[in-house]
Length: 131
Image 1 (cartoon, rainbow, N blue to C red):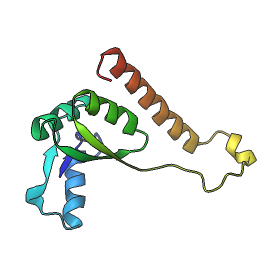
Image 2: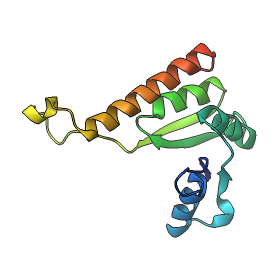
Image 3: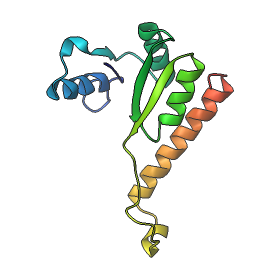
Image 4: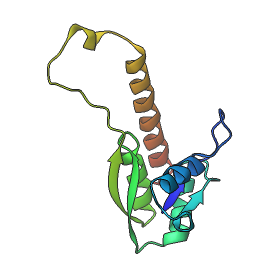
């Protein structure tokens, strides 16, 4: 199991160590966990995974549904064989539209921020020829 993510400005703990701790609490043997905690971004994580797995080994890529298109693009372009396993879906509970759907709130701001972040990331990766 490879877990990745740099340190958070809030706690100082790396995202990789938080994920590793969670995996151990769910019964994964800590000796089977590899932490990538020095990668600055998804491209760095892609290169680190490539070093560890090579290009022939299929693996489950578990990341946010928001982030999956960029992560898949970078990894496939690098010659890796990820199998997408998206998580952290944001969805509606019904098809009905309400007046509140058209009002601004912090939830909408959060979703817009993520959407813009991912679109900029994809655009940047395409400009660099990485996707």
